[in-house]
Length: 381
Image (tube, rainbow, N blue to C red; front, side, top):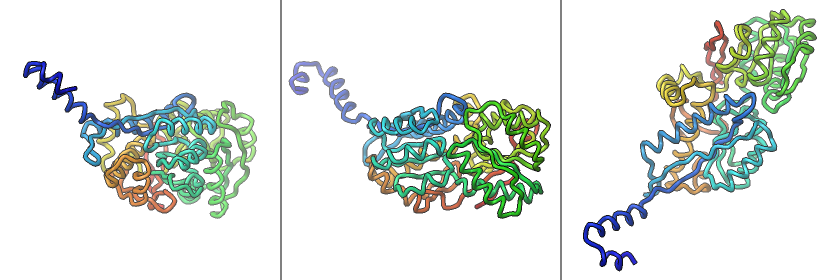
């Protein structure tokens, strides 16, 4: 057909037609990578932070150009909202499977990552969470589950040990938000605290939608602990710390990475200066390329990094690194390359153990000075 049309056209038109035919033949292959996090609700800012990190990686890789197996590739981010709800998380996971993504970056929370992980496992799709810390996520026997952060089994002990040795506390009250993340972190913290000889006065539960903590805090005030450990995210942890101060509690508020955000000062006011929190990864200012990444992120999105954007960024690059080693964008071949990952990026070197956890976890401890999140220490686990 092209020959017949060409014979009837002038030379200039023939050249244009052949060029168009060649362009069509060499068109980039579109490869979808999924990302899932809550994009509405109390922790939407954390979800959007992760999504931004993944999106920035996609844009950087596309700008540099990517060729796999001789074919030019254009990556596309398939971003979904799981509302931090286990049921929605499984529905979204199935949607990504149906969209034929080759890998998934997410989910944000353990409560969403764990139920969704079976969907990805059944489909043979790599799942890398930039932020899910509950140990159970990688203890299900799935070959598809990975994470680029430490776990609650590291976060909880690091926080408890700092409470005992750094803050010299003797008694603790514990409250969790009854989520897989908050409860898991609080339980591990409690185990370590007891093993260190700290007096655990009480362990109460609230929920991740709570706004009024006066009843629990009034009870705790009567117990007069040296510190209160709160297992939950900043959307509830901020009001928790604020109300504790309003009630006159002098106890330090200890928490994990879910509460350890730059937005905490907006939620807790000057009560942030009484908070000590831990993150399951190296601090941004300790990353070799942390400052450069921060500048690039803020220029692109016009807002500061919350917590795990660099980890989501590297997670995308880890998937692409597996593609390059496989010389394929086939999801099964990408999955086959994941165990041999040895990638050095913004967050440092990433290698995985047989379960998909980092071989060498790091925990960063923070406190707040005049509402500004400030690094206390980095602990290798």
